[in-house]
Image (cartoon, rainbow, N blue to C red; front, side):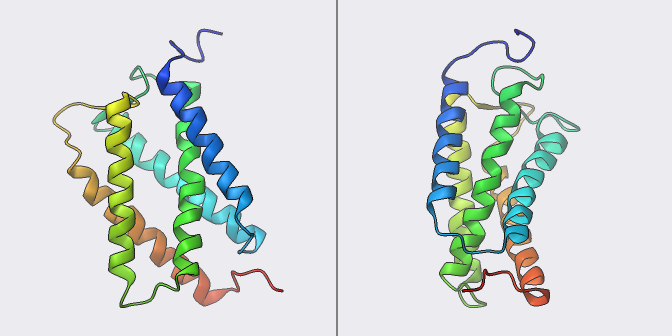
Length: 167
């Protein structure tokens, strides 16, 4: 069983707590979107997290490590699963607050700050460790790109199909 993770410490415990909190909130919030839209938003968050980790994280450029090693472990997958509900929350509140052209950039910037702050917390806990000259300030551009993409993608979907549940 040692091949699944090298150590079980505060990193894994923190990830389990965050997973529990995120998915509990996901199930507590009233269902707002059609089932396929909900799955799409969750998959989008997971995919974006994995994409950036595999390109700038531990993949092509290797700017940071997750958990305790440069090798992928079971809890790296659990870490990526945290991105799914946060992508959903991002759009859930985007729709709830009726974000439009005048409030778009402020909403994006708020979530960029949340994302960078969470990454800072993860670095303090040792879940994410930067290397090869990467600085947390670089994450601002990453989160700005991903949050803007997610919101524009949702706008594209919303313009073509009904996204909210009826009744």
